[in-house]
Image 1 (spheres, one colour):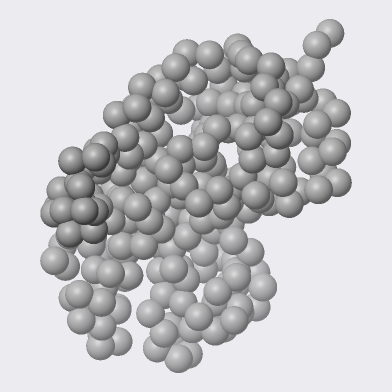
Image 2: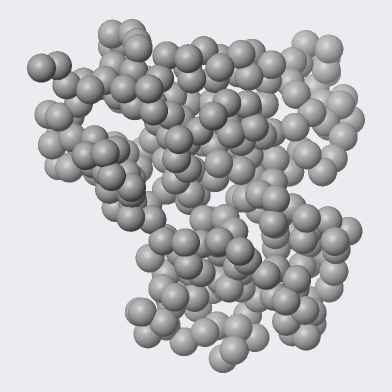
Length: 255
């Protein structure tokens, strides 16, 4: 019996989530023994074509060409999984959604008429049906490995939906907001990074996007009590997951 076919696709992104897969090293070799990697340009120029049992998609949709391409990939993929903030919420490049892209291109390029781009950067799920979304900027190596093995086994991946604060508590990290007054998105951000920033005395930047049923309005009130201005609060939500609906609406409330 032939191994399932895996394809890894890139759209508008920095390639960080694909590099996370390559960083799996020994684990990747084991995965490669259970899968036929049919498409993965970050790792090999070889391509065996579809259809594909699993497609991992990194990056957001920023051009009409890519909007067409993701529909073609979806049609050839049994399971389509988006990985990373770009693919799941539009990424840092979705900051264009709050501005005039034509004005940007006019100021930056000598011949803006040569530039073909959409006015927005949008997640893959805005264009096709997505079977699972793996958050992060970049994604967690351990979550990515569990996602692939779970998909092969036909089970649901073990991805937490709780807040980043739960990882702080589990690690014994003192709350940077309570103890030091540091602005932090931990209460509204999905866990998964392993407590990276708070463990080093920094506030959470929201890399893993909104947690399940967040309450950003309450957090914003707390941030205001800490002396954060409306613009500072707005900009805190406008980073890696600026176009995630819960973060987007809260940032717009502070425009």
